Amino acid sequence: MSNNKKKNLTPTQQEYQALAGKREVKRPLFKNCIKAFLVGGTICVIGQLIATFYMYFFKFTEQNVGNPTVATLIFITMILTGIGIYDHIAQFAGAGTAVPVTGFGNAVISAAIEHRTEGFVLGVGGNMFKLAGTVILFGVFSAFIVALIKTILIQWGGL
Amino acid sequence: MLTGHRTWIFENKPVIISTGTVGGPFEAEGNIAKDFDLLHSDMWLEQDSFEKAHKIMMDESCQKAIEKADLQKEQIQFFLGGDLINQITPTSFAAKTLGAPYLGLFGACSTSMEGLALSAFLINGKGANYILTGASSHNAAVEKQFRYPTEYGSQKPPTAQWTVTGAGTALVSDKGVGPQITSATIGKVIDMGLSDPFNMGGAMAPAAVDTIEAHFHERGVDASYYDLIITGDLAHIGREIAIDLFKKHGTTINEEKFVDCGLTIYREDQPVQAGASGAGCSAVVTYGHFLNRMNKGELNKILVVATGALLSPLTVQQNQSIPCIAHAVSIENGGAR
Image (cartoon, rainbow over all chains, first blue to last red; front, side, top):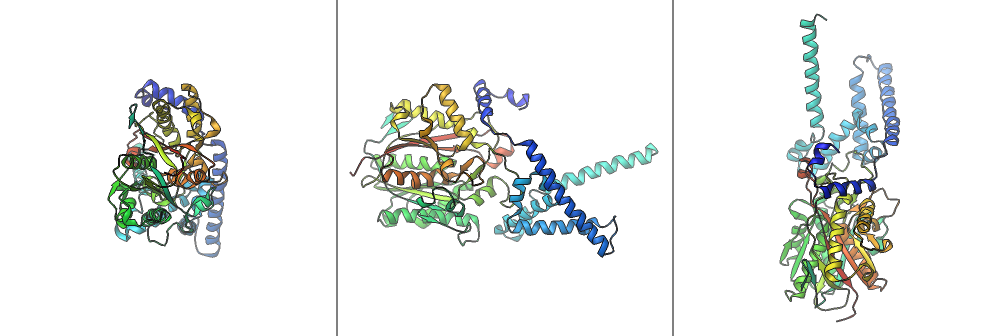
């Protein structure tokens, strides 16, 4: 816990938290990392196979094969989320299923399914990006900042 | 009669004449499936939303309790209940079906015993002859409100708890056959500054310990008086912390007789992390499993301490700590009156 947070606690609260902390089961960090690496890696291998498939059988190049590959992965995620399997895989895999594009797909799709009962406009439309919206906002924003820095460096830095 | 600061002794000994318990598919696979009056194989209960399914469960548990007591719903004089959904709509909507005068309660997962204590108080004071009290929760509806969408793949930590899908109702009367409510101790809100919504057992343990110790002190009994002391939903972590706290305070308690509803309802191999929780948890386990055991004579004196974490998604997002509460009600076998 940060020192700042600790400052606001009374001595009794601090004493209790020290006692409770001993009983608190920590996340098995190392085991979770291994599992995330294996599952996340498998998803990437599947992605690579899909990409190779598109390049081999269709007229895609390494530059533009990303689009159909991502779409296919999200489609698979949609099926797995819809039939209720994805969250079970995620409980096992953790970051392994959250970090690849499948995690983003799952965040959008699960919210859309969840709020279907409130109708298409206010339910699905209003809540679909409840979780993913923040990824989009800060993703776009950080891309903008990086592009700005790059432009400045090229224009005035003489790169 | 008030004894001490916050304990009521019920000298007229209100009786729990019947109970109604309803569970979902996950509970049907659990440890105490045979103690439910009604189990559903479908989370939706043939409704088009989880919230509507939630309300139907409450309806059914009321119906079961009335049916088992051989009464008509018009004979119910008051209905006291609550749940975890915004503005406790499932319970209020169920009260509409029931048609009885209604008092809505919110005590998070402690609602079951809040309702039972108040019902006993009203019956004891001759305020009514028949009162129905209950609490319920629906896993998907509660997850939707408090956490992430049900199908969202987030990895839950080992301290997390699984919300019970179930509704439990008790019919309390001034006469009849059944276990009697002998006393109740009302809890204080206790906040130890914990703010992790995925470790509610840890946040609630001090509230449970405070209420239990106050109960012993004010009623003038110790832990050996009871066959079982049953907490609501402390689960593995909260229960261990509570035992540590008792040791630290010098309160003797027999660990084998200190059980938790959240650890009773599911089998050990069901993937629920630390254990079960939810307003329905203490309600179905107490009114189903433990009262059945009392009626069979396996238990004679129990103290049920339902624990509640009084948080909302908003307070969690605003980084506020989790205030908790626990209410204790003692239920004892006494024979017919």
